[in-house]
Length: 151
Image (cartoon, rainbow, N blue to C red; front, side, top):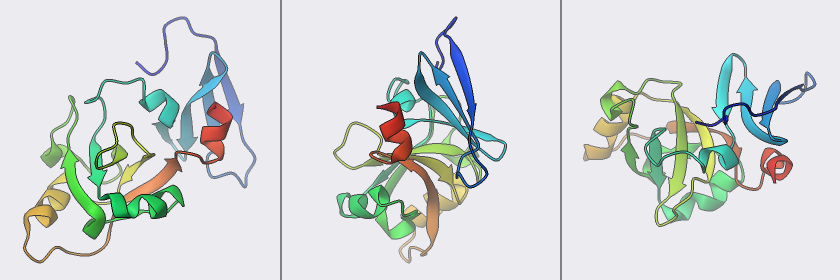
């Protein structure tokens, strides 16, 4: 669970120019952020979840600088996609919340959402002619302002 039972929750509405519109804090630390009607865990909260709680994309180490700079993940940089305990890869939909890991790193470096279905991504990973394009939208990364707020 991202939010502990009986935790003191704080809801903070952000200004109109902010990329996220609301933060949900537990025990004074941001745990969830809202963009539009969607809720996403902060990295700090995601790190407390079971390994298979959310879908996981694993990217090549060469892309880490781009991702930490806020770039979306492109298919050529993706090494593998793993489903979650609640959803197999083929059942993942466009817009599904996911975590991005860098190969060899035990902790997620980004929270975002899928820009392609799990089935489309899986097909591209096994295809000889891998298509180009974005597969993951980066919404929050290690070291960004939301991370610093949660720090």
